[in-house]
Image 1 (cartoon, rainbow, N blue to C red):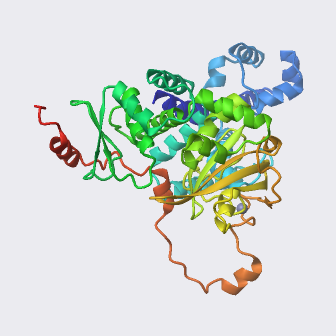
Image 2 (cartoon, rainbow, N blue to C red):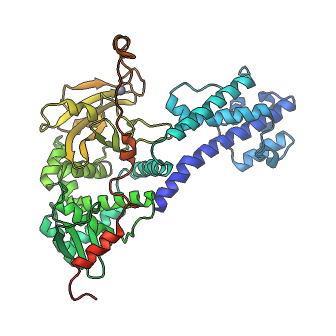
Image 3 (cartoon, protein in one colour):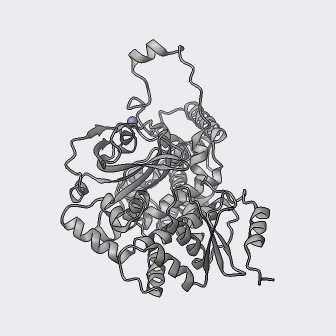
Amino acid sequence: MSQVKQVLQVHQVESDEDASMAFAIGRRIRDRRVAQGLTVTDLAQRLGRAPSQVSLVENGRKELKLSELRQIATALATSVEVLMNAEPPSRRAALEIALDRAQRGSVFASLHVPSLAIRKSLSDDAIATILALHDEIQRLHQERAATPEIARRANTALRLDQRNRNNYFAHLEEIAKDLLALIDHHGGPLSQRGASDLAKHLGFSLHYVGDFPKSTRSITDHRNGRIYLPVNLRGIDPRSALLQALALHVLEMKEPQDYEELLFQRVETNYLAAALLIPEASAVEYLSVAKNARELSVEDLRDTFAVPYETAAHRFTNLATQHLDIPVHFLKVHDSGVISKAYENDNVVFPTDALGSVEGQIVCRWWAARQVFSMEDQLTPYHQYSDKPAGTYWCTSSIQNTPSGVFSVSLGTTFEDARWFRGRDTKKRFKSTCPDERCCRRPSDALASRWDGMALPSAQLNSSLLAAIPTGTFTGIDRVGIYDFLETHAPASAE
Ligand SMILES: [Zn+2]
């Protein structure tokens, strides 16, 4: 929990704040220098530095140590306090500071316009107009944001945290290892029997029932040491549902109070369940052999450990960088093109909205995650190279039919690392210039002139809302239904 929160605050706010602060201090230094009739070279001489260093400082491109700031303050016959004063020294400086801050923000990043050098020739009125436009775009984006701000922030923070860990959670791998040792499991896939044994070792009996409350995957009764699971899992691997219930127990998780906590619990329980289904040691042994033979394949991992494709791709993402030294990206996309989950540490650039959110965005139609939907044969693994602005990537994709819709699950890596994978010899190759609209979002002039004003599509419910909020809600849990259920199914001897 705290990690997600920390990432959110440290990476999103402070780094921007620091940069803006450096720029503001730089502007005050320049104002003070100019007021004293000094040139950059004059000040540089007083400091015993190159003029280029002074320019870097004045333009906020270099962060100063306190000792350096003191030296500059002395050279300008002022104090550190004056240079650090939060009030901008002049209207002009205030405008420049605001423009600099705006150009570092996500609204400008999402517009893909080159950033404007802040020169003397840029008039105050021009800066004020740009700032007014910027603020209005930001306001519109926030107004239109279909998902709650907290959900976007939590998703973004989580993606960053996963990236920093290379998608590998060492503490959960340790716990998985200890749990498997409890039932003397020494490698290979974990069977349904093994999962039941684990439940027994942790003090639970299992009860499969038909009248299961909606929107719950499992219910754990701590009073009687029971785990209830639905008879009909609607396509979910029965081991997954059980292992996730056990993971909640082992990780001592309480009912989540907000979205962030729910998301965090989902990620950790999913990870631990997958780490039990595909134990680290056996998987790494298996994957290392496959890498040496240049035969890495998500399908093989799926078949060897008898898990759904998404579990195999997820697990591959966890282990690839840590153990095989291969950076990867993972992408789950609805057949409408909307991103449902996305993680990367190979620098592939996902589409984002103005607030930096990936979930709910539409993926380029030339990426494997979209192209795979046009394949008639959905059983043969799909591979393609994509030339993207950030470089060339190789991806493998598979289509999954789930109770909540049809999705593609993709695993990708850089061109260089494609050599370890089966399917690297594919002839399929597409060019994507997204986020440039001319790539795949704007109709050709010929089509536009033929159809503009002649078509009236009926919009679907904004699917970004559905994508960013996990199915199964924390607020919507029917407590009455669950307590009734527990009363009905509790053993007769219970008080
Ligand atoms: Zn595109």
